[in-house]
Length: 481
Image (cartoon, rainbow, N blue to C red; front, side, top):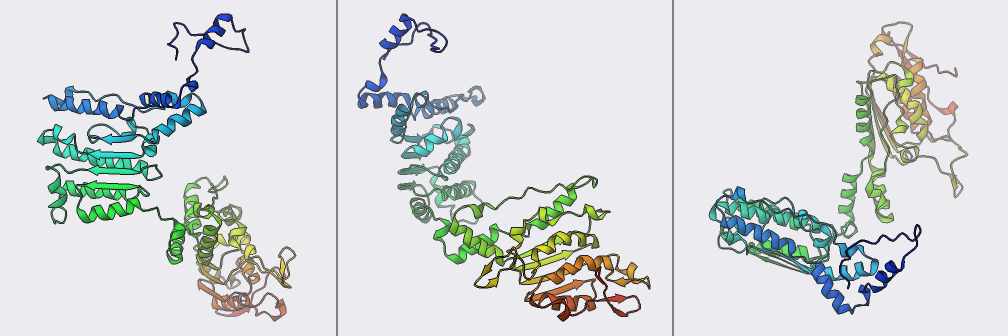
């Protein structure tokens, strides 16, 4: 290989002609890839020294040991960076990276006052070496007054290594040896004791971090309680458990925790809080698909089965400061029509009468119009646009007393009836309940209509009735009457 030239030759072939001098220098450069593989591996070994950072740290700790003023010893400035040899070309990168996988990392000290392991060892190196060893060889260097600091340095190092290795690694051997005579009593005598022991509790925290590291070829734990070491070793050497390895009952429980379309009620509440200027449009949130529905087809199918069986609980808050009809948010901006058509159980809680205008957008999604040209026909039977089985409505109207105080008014009035009449187009339900301020003379026949098949015409439906202040019950007159 050639030595570094005294001057730099700039080669822009598209801008200038290559001179004979430059051509001669190029031809005299020895091609690295013509070297035998054995020699190239030796060069990779000198270029990729995995122990360099640890050697610097070791000298730093020895300086701390030999001084009476620890503040006078400055921590080394170490930072991880991509080795230059990785940046040459693809072949050199592949050969040198393969060499990295044969390397091993040894940590004789904890981190002490150093920041993180990433500062001097790249995460890619930690994940690709085949062997990592953490031992307490450096612990005797320190005096008794920093025993706790030395121990916490090891714990911090183990936790950070576990965080790096948890997503994936190439480890075949992992050894953690903390068997120094000053440390052993804290993880043996104190392990089952009732009193507080910082050494014991911090080791438990480190072990919890290690439990997330799986598929290690061989794990050796020295200085750990026997039962803990055996359990931790078996777990870290075992292959990771995938979601589909769990029983279906457990997977369904996970799906139930990960999915809940009733979250749109919280989104609606947050939107109303953010919507301070009612002259502008509501700040609708961005709709997104839950991550668990994007993993694979089997998980998506199973998760959707659980989701569709959940009730959609939609709460329209009473505190909103809306003054006009057109200001009422459109519910379809929080959840799509396609998603609503899979809802089986709808729980609708309207805490203020103004939200009836939002029903003009919501109810047509569930309407079982019969027949409907856009719904497909399977085996001679038309498929409706939803799977709704039950509806439970709680309605609060702070204007009810005002309507009933007027002898010429009925409740529900024509405006309220016009919005609620969309419920009568939702048919074939198994269960319908109403609670709140709507009178029974209106809700009982409405619930009967909603449980009737969609094929029954208007002539065979019960009449909806309204209530006067005197208690008289009269038929409701809609816009068509």
